[in-house]
Image (cartoon, rainbow, N blue to C red; front, side, top):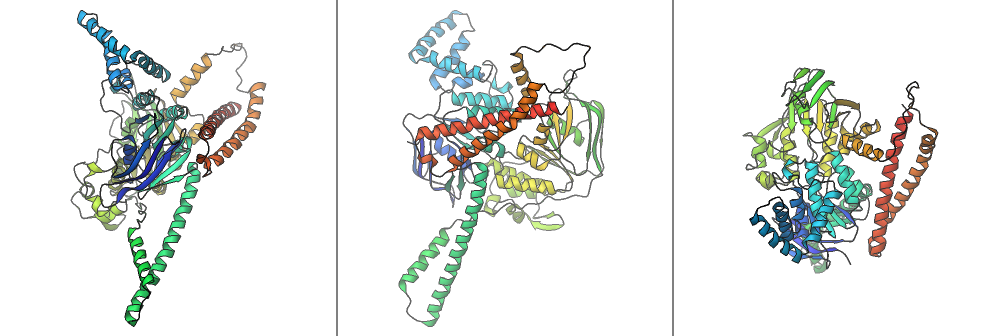
Amino acid sequence: MPLLTLDAVSLAFGMQPLLDQATLTVEQGERICLLGRNGEGKSTLLRIVSGEIQPDGGTVRLDDGAILSVLPQNLPVDDPRTAYEVVASAFPETGKLLAEFHKLTQSADEQSLNRMMKVQERLEALDGWRLDQKVSDILAQYSINPDQTLNTLSGGWQRRVLLAKALVTEPSILLLDEPTNHLDVPAIAWLEEALSQFRGAILFVSHDRAFIRRMATRIVELDRGHLVSFAATYDRYLDLKEKALEDEERQNALFDKRLKQEEAWIRQGVKARRTRNMGRVRALKAMREERRQRRERGGTASFAVEDAARSGKLVVEAREAGFAYDPAKPLITSMNMTVIRGDKIGLVGENGTGKTTLVRLMLGDLAPTEGQIRLGTNLQVAYFDQLRGALDLDRNALDNLAEGREFIEINGQSKHVLGYLQEFLFSPERARSPVRVFSGGERARLLLAKLFSKPANVLVLDEPTNDLDVETLELLEARLVEFAGTVIVISHDREFLDNVVTDTVFLDGSGKVREFVGGYSDWRRQGGRFPAEASERSSRSSKTPAPAAPPASKPRTPKLSYKLKLELEELPAKIETLETRLERLQGKVGDPEFYSGAAEVVSETLEEMSETQRQLDSLMERWMELEEQANQ
């Protein structure tokens, strides 16, 4: 019995339906990634599943006894509640009483004591103390301080509290909408680990390809109102999707050719004034209607970057530079860096380590409080703001971009503003709609259109991948690689960094700024670690007895011991075994008949695949660690 069933669900806000007889089933233990272009209606579909929106037609059925929880896409702006209050609010009446009881325990006056007795009586009637224990347990499990207010937490910790709230009810199905947006890499890694331990079903929307590869056991694509399921991993889905599009294009071409022949036949029959085969005429009418009903797949974005005159060879040079808002807590210290024209720099670090401050220093918006920063000549900077602050939500896309112009010039060619916006997949009707009604992806595309309409030889992109669909993301990567100028990117999208940047700059939070050649994966291979990982490793090692220190007279040797050498030699075979097992399991899950089997077998197979992936990641991490020691 499926946990969730969507049967012939339809919904339309305009001329074209967002959902057209959409059908989907979700089984226990599945982790389904919902993919689709920006504006296709993915978030709307999640809101239909959660009951927030009612469809125009069709049914949405939850299995009897199934519990559904939602991890919201947007983080709260200024929530003064404590972490305990937020998690307890998952149980509406009981949560309010528990939060009130905890506050009353901090008061000693008679009025508070009388109220506390009444609250306690009601909690006992609602079995509130059992729920209180569940809230306390999950807060402890996720290492959350129950008294910390939400508005004082970083985005990653806020997401952790909200996930605790979603899971404290022990749901059967968890809905996630772009869960990695605005999270740093350690927070994303923590989220992946927490979700991999969840035994219920997950339906999530994401464009983070590394996250999808790690989490998804099945891909469901929302394409022109229909849901198409691919019982495959993400990489296999890409191959199957490409083949499906080729088949569709070939079938449409054959249909159009036949329709053209039938149209020629009917016209010839009229000219010759001879009796026509009425069955063939009726078939032609049916073909015309079928062609009229066909929804063409939208075009692909085809934007280009407007190049400015070349900057000087030197873009930025920093010598022993530093910056501090508070002298006692410097954000950046003793930074030495040289950026040359054509460099593509990726800034990596946990939230709050000073990445945006570093960019402002590099652009001259801030003056260093120590050392020197020298800027190159003829710099023309275009800035992509992650908060989309450059967009006026009350104006339409046309006015946001044109700023009174009817034509804009791109690389020496004059283009009409509407035509230029169509390159970013905005129809004339959509271009005249207010930005306030745009999806997150549409706002990101509009900001890119505005950014690339101005000449620049330095592009600064702050979290450009948030909300962009995969097709637009891949095109953006290609354009940035082709761009002859300098690119500075702040991003937590690991695959985007690997595909674009030539140098990774890491901010560790202590003020140190270190530069590594290559992308994110190259940084990891060179021993790059986040402070959270280092502290976690040290806490694990502190639980085991520390080895005796070597005598002071003997120099420390970096060579591996015999035991570690033996472990290093055995690791490749173990890794190969796990990879073979994982490949076998992925092939089994990718079989279209897999989910029609017994629910217990499906759940056990998915759990085995998740555990195998976890073991493989652990062995790969250990192998990299020992290789690094062996090469010292």
